[in-house]
Every structure is written in structure tokens, then in C-alpha cells.
Length: 462
Ligand code: UD1
Ligand code: CA
Image (cartoon, rainbow, N blue to C red; front, side, top):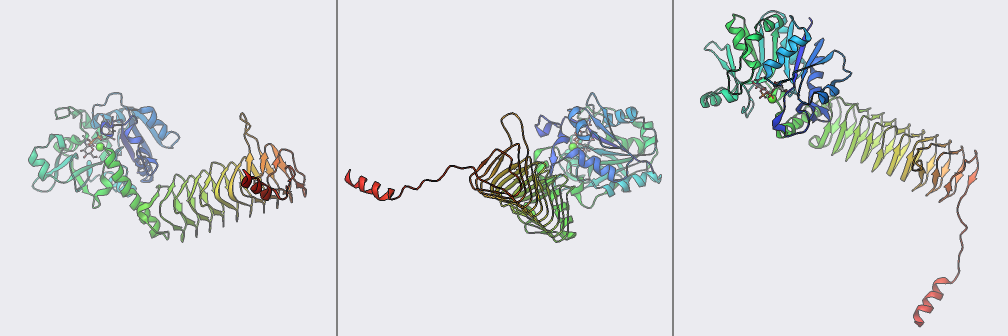
């Protein structure tokens, strides 16, 4: 079965009051349009044609590089029916099942899309629409049924009489399947004789029914799947629904969450079983966490990989790699390219960027480590930092195995510190240190004996 999906994403999204495309607004850090397009791809659609218009470049960029996804431009916003016509013409769609999805329908499930496409592919219906009964139906198109319970037409909220608005509670979710040939044959019959003066896609049901084709609706038992986003309030509502759905999935698969209501996990994140998520955690992007880890509280991991049995407390990590049995935080900041190898530690108020912390090495307190290759079993004393930036360029630091860096050491890059080295506390290391050496760079200490007593005696006299 070859299924084409058309995703409508050209609208202005006026009700968002935004300088950006509506469909670019994020739900759990993933733009709405990507939720919809991914659902279509996961449902098995071979071709996803996205209609862009308002902020077209922004939307194109969000879909750039996705296989089987193409964009067509609707230069004038003449309505959802017009948008579909533009897609059919520009993409040369002539037949086969065509699924149409509103771009602001982020929680639609792949299974639903597949079921829709299959019904039409079997030839049972020329058109089907997904419906729901949300607690607040305001703003949705309403399904009108005849006395046999068959769909006669969809009436937009703005075209409803007060009585229709109050009694027709079955709402159009904005997910449709059409027989492509029937759609192409009849889409030219849409007209703009309605409250908004637009070509409504929703009118296709009535048009196809009048042409003698079978049209139907499928009621979605969970109305939340069919909610659309027209405003920031709805964006927040759907974000909460997505969070609950994702958290429930992880808990079902063996992840413990102490406080699911403060746990925000992106749709593509993976977590191994027996990992415990403590309160106030955000796991975003392509983050992957292995089994038996403890994450949180107050932790945000973005595009970060974590192995097994690691403890990550009050940490922010972006594009970092944390291997097995690592100890991180509280209050660690791991920036892109930070790699903590097995059994290593990044402790309190520690920032690490583009650096490897070798197996069993420890950076326990108040350090900045940047552009550094660190061997195994190294200990970095409190307050030590790599001075990797000279104001113009970044330079690298190399630290060998089992080296001990005393507290408050400045390692001025580029510098190479060998293996089995000891660096005395408070040294400013500007020259390479050979293997096995003690490096000391500090002025000699002077003790002036009896100082305090003499000073007190003098103060007493004055
Ligand atoms: C639409 C439906 C309504 C349904 C609701 C579900 C129509 C006429 N109405 O209303 O029955 O209950 O969705 O959420 O279809 N778009 C374009 N080009 C255009 C106009 C819109 O691409 O010229 C896109 C928008 O970007 C959006 C989608 O189509 O992603 C739906 O448009 P929107 O204005 O949000 O329609 P609703 O008023 O929500
Ligand atoms: Ca909408």
C-alpha cells in the first residue's frame, strides 16, 4: 500500500501572536510540525508532502534532510481546501490513499493514521474524518449526521447557528483520509461561500457524499489525541498531555519516576529499566540513558548519552557523553563534546567542554576543564582550571595517566602534562611537564614570627 500524506502548515497562526510559524512552536522541545510529520512517517506513509506558506523558510528548515518529506508552497492562504489542492497539483498526486493532517495536530498517533489509510485503501470509503468530543468544542468544525447516523457535512464553528454550536458536539480533529482519485476529481468543486470566505477542506465530505461516494467518520475515544493548537494556552495544555503520555510509557517499561508531574521528557528520548528519575528533570532531544541510573533532581540533559549505573545529580548537559558508573554533580555543567569515561567524576560547580575525562579520573570541585584530553586515574584538585582561551584562539591541554593536579592549579594551554606527574597546589603551569616529575610554580612562603602579638601591643598603645 502506497500512502501519501499531505500536512497543512501554511497558515498564519494569528492566534499564537508570534513572529514565528505556528507549527515551529515546540512541544517538549520538538517543533509541532515534526511531531506530525514523524507520525505520518511512522505510520508508513511513503511520501509526506508538507504545504508551507507563512514563514515558509523556517518550516522548510525544520524538515530539511528528512527522507521522503518534501515541501510545496501555498503562496496565498485561501483555506485548507486550497492548501490541499496546491499539494495535489504541485506533487502530482493522482490516486491511492491520501491522508491529510493539520500541521497543528501534534498528538496524532501513527496507528490512527495507518488505520485511516487502510480503510480508504480497501475501497470502503472515499473519505473518512477523525472526530472527537473534547470538553470544550469551541473552535472546532462540527460533524452533522443524518437520521441514519451517516455524516452529511462538517460545519465550521463560525458557520454554525447557535443551536448547531450547542448540539453538534462531535468535532473534526483535522485528520482525514481520501481516495486520491476521488479527491482530485472533485476538489475543484470547493467554493468560498462561508463565514471566512475560504476554501474549506471540510466541505469535501459533503461534495463526495453528494457525488454518491461513501464517506464516514471515526470517533477517537481519547479526545486528547485530536486536539489542535491555535493558541499558547492550547500549546501548554498539549505539552502537559504529551508529558503524561510519554512518562506513562517509560514507567510502563520499567523506569521509576518520583514526580511525573515535574518530569519533562522529549518524545525521542530512550531510558533503560530500573533507572530512577527524581523530581524536576528535563530530558530532551536525542538523549539516551541506560539502565540503573539515577537522574535528578533538577537536571536537564539535551542530546546526551548516558551509560549504565551512573548518578547524575543537579546537572545540565548538552551534547555530552557520560559512560558507565559515572558520578556527576551536584551542579555540574557539561557542554558539547564533554566525555566522562567509566567510573569518572565531575563534581560540584564543575564545567567541562570538549574534553575527555579518562576512566576513573575525578574533577570533584570548582573546576573548568576545556579542550582537554585527560588520561585514566587522574585527580584534579579543587579550583583547578585549564586556561584554554588566550582571548583569540582556543588551545588544548593533555594530562597523562595517574597524574595528580594540586588544588588551584592553572594549566595554561597549549600545555602537555605527562603521566604520574604531581603538580603542587596553586601552580601556574605554562611549560610542559615530563612523565613522573613534580612541578611546582609558586613563590616561597615567608613566616614572620610573633607578628600578631606585636600588632596587638601597638594597637593597645594608640
Ligand atoms: C480546522 C478545520 C476544523 C477542525 C480543526 C481541527 C477547516 C476549514 N477547518 O480549523 O473543522 O475542527 O481544524 O483542529 O479545515 N492551513 C494552510 N493553508 C491555509 C489555511 C490553513 O496550510 O490556507 C493550515 C494551517 O497552517 C493549519 C491547518 O491548515 O496547520 C488548519 O488550519 P487552521 O486555521 O488552524 O484551522 P482551524 O480553524 O483550526
Ligand atoms: Ca487549527
